[in-house]
Image (cartoon, rainbow, N blue to C red; front, side, top):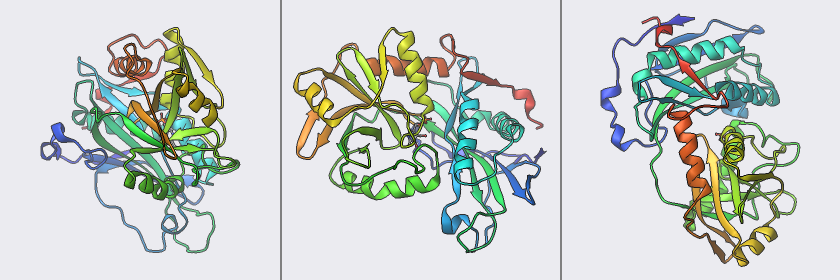
Length: 354
Ligand SMILES: Cc1ncc(COP(=O)(O)O)c(C=O)c1O
């Protein structure tokens, strides 16, 4: 791997007490190009613009996939990556579905560790801080025929982030638009999925909601996801999340929460949740909590769910499962409690060839 360190840092220009999600970038980026049937040498260099001709394929047909993952800093100053293997595997699962050549593990892992080692100062200590990492691959060949590209670019960029409590989410059950269909691309992180979700989300936001709960494409009867998060409800003392299918993204936070909840002795069911079940549980006072899970937010509370004109307000729970799960997950990610599942990997600072 070729490494060109920046030589100075832009970190002093960033106000870590007022971080907006996704708008600041760390000093370095990784870039690696696929041409003539193979991936070339990866290069780490200062974060900078990339050259692109107007005929570049990704701009026309959206042949692009991405990942979202995080690194954290422990109180001792160690850098911990959370479930890197899972993000790597999911990136290649997405790549395969979009006809993008898979990225070799050494390019992904070595590059990831190297960039984090170089940009370790961008990860602040403290439960709220993390570095959001965005690996992505796009069709960088030039051709405006709707066809598979023969050239691709893999990149990793990083953005410092904070998870501050911005209040509960108030969500709308979406019964007109659809995020994913059977046989579609909903279970992978294809860029186009997100473009298609913006319009219905914008409409919901204009009505004052924070997010949409997507429902199934056929009858809009079953809950699927909460925006770009997996959805969870608690009925009595049981946690329920929709089972994975080709219309649901297999969230890594979702999987972690399934396992943590079981560790905490909470009964978890992965199965279909219908709107009628949700309504009935709410009417009977059995709907105790609802929340979303995802890398960017970790666990986020849902304060109300609206179906047409019917707003189902959720109670404030004393012993909230969501709060306890979030606390445990955050503690594991920051190395404060034992990581019994082997989810965290330390980034060696010596890896960097400063
Ligand atoms: C559609 C969708 N669902 C769920 C998630 C949550 O996945 P994860 O927990 O791996 O971030 C994401 C974010 O990656 C997403 O884009």
